[in-house]
Image (cartoon, rainbow, N blue to C red; front, side, top):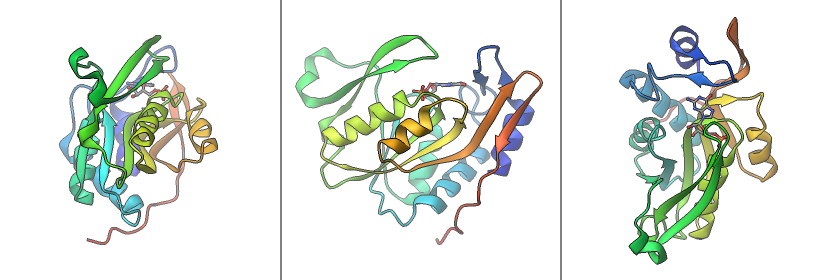
Length: 199
Ligand code: 5GP
């Protein structure tokens, strides 16, 4: 997605350890018109998949997921990183390991928010080692629902997340794919354009 690549190039900051800081438009400050364009792009890619729900993880997945849910006219659910200990039997939970934060974290979704009839599009801001997306897929499957696809805003293609997810049989669509992330510059893998949006 050209607009996203331009924004990453202009306003992204490469940190030393292969981490990209995008606080200017996605992770802290949020660019509303970019979020709308992201929603339209995901719609173009997934509009024939019969999506009934978007599942993401708080907090940075919420903005692009909201515009995608609006574009696809479906419900949005976000997994919580904190959970109420009094509600354990009413939750789907899973443990994810964050390489960026170097810690395990439990995420949860209320059983009321997913049904076995759902066709779920998982969305996240970044794909690195694939643990967050895999955890979300586990929650969808605990509910007996179907993972219709995984939509990623920024994929770091030099990390193993994509192959982990595609080897597990999931469809992965990323709007920007970073081949290399260096202080001297960011290189992208050029993608084919999504289908035209039918409104
Ligand atoms: P994974 O589970 O695929 O290893 O990592 C995905 C999660 O880690 C994303 O939800 C995102 O919050 C965080 N993350 C991974 N790499 C980066 C990065 O380069 N920059 C930022 N801002 N977040 C990242």
